[in-house]
Image 1 (cartoon, helix red, strand yellow):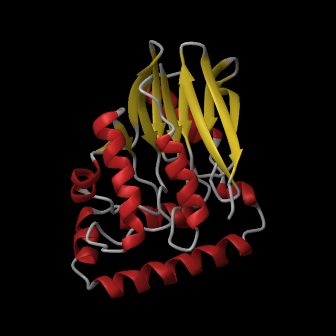
Image 2 (cartoon, rainbow, N blue to C red; image 1 turned 180 degrees about the vertical axis):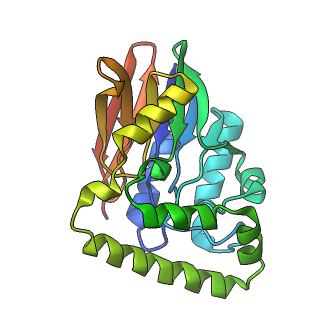
Amino acid sequence: MSVFFIADLHLSESRPDITQAFLDFIQSLSEQTTALYILGDFFEYWVGDDDPSSWLLPIKSALKNTSHNICPIYFIHGNRDFLIGQRFARETGVMLLEEPSVIELNNQRVVILHGDSLCTQDEGYQKFRKIVRNKFVQFVFLCLPLKMRFNIFAKGREQSKHKQQQVMDMQILDVTQTAVSQLMDAYQVDLMIHGHTHRPNIHRNARRLHRGTRIVLGDWYTQGSVLEVNQDGFLLNSFPLVTS
């Protein structure tokens, strides 16, 4: 019996290799799988559930088939796909979770989240995050014509790339120990799982010295990254993308 976690696939029409890697992965899940958790940035960006793009159809179909026939699929919003809503959930069968959420694995409480909220050194981003996560702002944005929403997201993505190129201290883009320990203390957990930073690793002493573990999921830009949790423990795996 296994539970799987993935994040930061950044699925897009321009990267069919990543889409195929995801489809291969989800189709490989056996009946011994008890749950799949997607911890944000599943898509490169999401302009709204009314996006009619045809490249999304096999992804939605695979999610629906898995959620109906194999295991429940849980989804936490990332900083790229925070506009995924109830229509998408109905079409795919995925269940949207609040961020952060606490689940139980092997009789242990675990806090799960995307992870961008832990990057507290990047004060500019945290202010921006607060604005775009506002429900009224999202409502107004989703009322805009679809083409305009695509243009806004494309421009925002270019600005984000430019900012990352300009940031000299990459630690600013990583989580802070204080934010991690405060969140783990708030939920009284000794295990945290998140994505966002694209730095897959298993960190000990996450909550405080000699206490707490933080597992960071990897992105899917150059390889697949999957965390499997079963009765024997947890295994953070990577595998190559197959290119045609």
